[in-house]
Length: 343
Image (tube, rainbow, N blue to C red):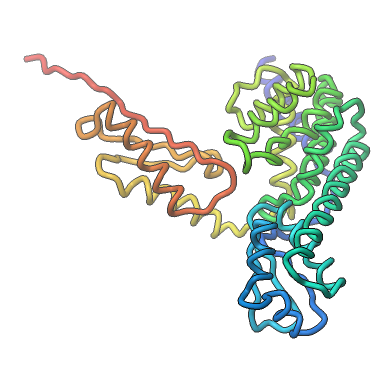
């Protein structure tokens, strides 16, 4: 009976996952770290730069973005890692080009106007996401924070769209398994909420998202699904496990993400190479999709104090050598062995 139950549960689990996944069909969007702004003629480039570069310096200071003006005809490139800031800069540059008067005082006005416009778009995107996910009763600040994910991408997948997908999948899984559908639905929608602020506040996006939820009155059952979705906090409820599954399904479904396998493997290899370059390291393993590097050291060469020092040095080297989203946890493991020989 036990063997029969195990066999049936495996088949049923596969059937549930397949049934839920086939309901999701969504577009793929390309990851962006630059925005292209079309200009009517190349003489506009000179006006954007300004006398002795004063306009471009004022623009970059006001937006925190880099302007790339090269020989490419008819376009100017706005570059920034922070997507909301980049969209503000792109919108402000559009206003300036339409107005035609490009000077430091006009630049400040255009950036302020663009910032107000983007704030409206963010709030509207958050409200639409809540409607699409069929979630009600959220605090307005949570909705605004969620809307900021409209400009965030992870390996080509739009993060706001990913949150909506995860909510749909989590609700469907909860329904199939008899769990609390509303907790799974809201937890799925808000699981990546912390990604809207993780470049401004120190901490992992899962824990930051849970903290935002608590601040604005979300129930413990929902905040737990948020903080546990990468298992930094041990998942203790069925709904938390469902959100973990739904998150993985949305991120790994065919066509969801565009990162080449070779690039992914190269990043993991780069992490392991950095760790292995230090003295006393026996083996290093990149785990959790590159979010953690686990280092095994030789106990006769590295003591407990050296393990702490090694973790700090490896983390500094990673910060200086690699570009990566979010945070990477460095864990050093030192095994203590005692042995005696009996004659």
